Image 1 (cartoon, rainbow, N blue to C red):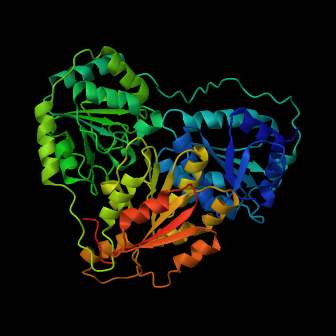
Image 2: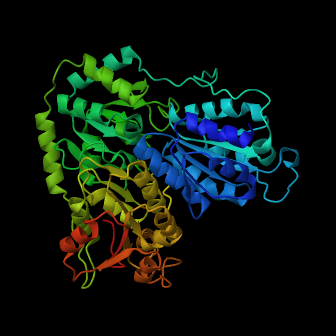
Length: 541
């Protein structure tokens, strides 16, 4: 067995069923041996999107996403996708080809120090020096990526290592124990009991749910706990979908771009349970203020996050699913916070989302997104891109039993289409809709070819306003309408783009029967592109 065969065998042992990537000489031995495997191979059109596809796949499947590219520019192109996954704690294993071992450090053709380049954006990285280490390295990589605070791991494999024969019999480890990596799973029981006592004492408790709740698979446990104790819930952007949008205990997204009533609910609480969230600037603009006049509990699997931005009253390290299971086991007192919930309902009613006054021929983007999500299936997957479309989607989309995916921590434009491809391949039974701005669309529209080649039916909505809308909005306020580098006057004709890739095309504007057109757009499971004409001067607030 040669190294390339060993890599394939390792992926099969990890029950990998799809791998996203791009070819090149330095990774070709691996792709050649993949021909003998049942693992599905998906050729994306630019390397960054291999990581985004793997990210969407991981978030819906609950498994580790896998991508593989060649050395040099192939590997460096992958960095943005790896950084995007790292910022949102998405479990990935990224495989890169490398030049021959004896040439490393010689600045030969297509050599890049990729392990050094990604140091800030991975949980760990490996440069394979001995072909016999491949089984151990892959076992460790999958373990590291999928445990503790999840995230990407990179394995860089020189060309000659892929072709070298193993001198020992291939043996994939049954288990793994790393002396320097032992993530905490179970929460400290004394701390757990302290939290329950605080919940029983609190008059105005609130849970702020972050993306860690999804990553832990703890959605059901958190909902049960909130319902049992009648505790209101708000979420960060990555936590959207932890509670259904219309759940009576859900009070919206917090943060700079969140709902005012959600921020007010968190500020006026006397007990804040921060669950699987980093307390980062986008979710909490002034971390020092959220601790005033309240008990703060910070629950996270990563001890480095607790106390990093704000000091909690009660720190609690562990896996959220395990912790909330323990909460439910010992919490035998059903609390009554009806007056608090009524007050938050009042705030919500007083600060309901305002419609955008659209000029003739343009659609109100908020109203459109509300209607789009209402027409989607209950368990559909909504993938928002970055920019104004993301803000409108976070505020107005209705999540029921489905999922809401987006790039939160890194805010990577062009994320939604490849992530939607990965999500659809993770669960082909689900309806998947990607919502993207016309700027971001041109960063990833080459993946329409991937959708066509592998018959991955995704619905794509392009919010077209002819600008990099979020930056234009910033320049509107910061520079008094002195616009620079934001006008997209060279935009392509989207009807011709759709035709070129064999997709159905629709266009809706202010004169359209929107609900009728949306239903037609969503009626089947075929790839379709809808152009939504939005006022170029529309704002997110």
